[in-house]
Length: 193
Image 1 (tube, rainbow, N blue to C red):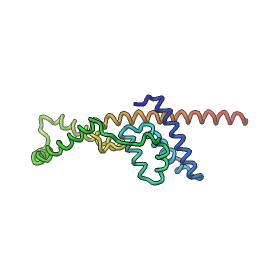
Image 2 (cartoon, rainbow, N blue to C red):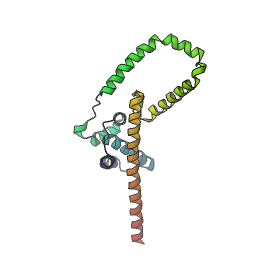
Image 3 (cartoon, rainbow, N blue to C red):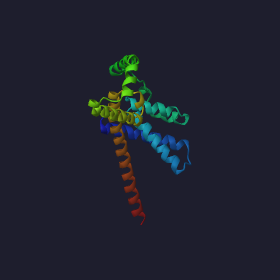
C-alpha cells in the first residue's frame, strides 16, 4: 500500500507527464476540451500510480477502450508494471461462493416467490427494512467505485475506502497546485506594478 506522500509524488509525476502528452497532441483546445483532458490525465495518473487495486485497473481498462486515450495510458504505465489482474485467495473464494450461491438460489426459487407474494413477516419488518436499505446503498456504492459492479460486498468496501483516500490525495495535490499558481500570479502582477 502506498503512503500518502509517496502516492502524491507518484501522482504528480504521472499527471505532469500526462498533461505534457495531451498538450503536445492538440495545441488549440477550448476551455471545455482542456477541462476534460486535465480530468482524464488526473484520473489515469492516479490509477497508474495505484495500479494494484481493482478500481484502478477498471479505470485504466475503461480509458484504454477509447483510441485517443491508448497512447496516454501506455505512456503513463511503466513497462515493468503492466496491469496484470491476479486473483487473490479472497477473490477465488468469493468466486466459488458465488457459484455455490447461484445453485442454492436456483433451488430455493419457488420458496422466494412465495415469500415475495406474502411480504415480509410482521415480526421481522425492521430486519427486512434494514436489509433493503443496505442493499440499495450497496448498489449505489457499486456504481460510484470504478469496477464496483463485479465486486462482492467485502471487496467493494475495501476498494471504496482505498478509492476515497486516493481521491483525497488527488484533490490535495490539485489544491496545492492551484494555490501555488495563485501565489505566483499575485507575485507576477506585483512585479509589473
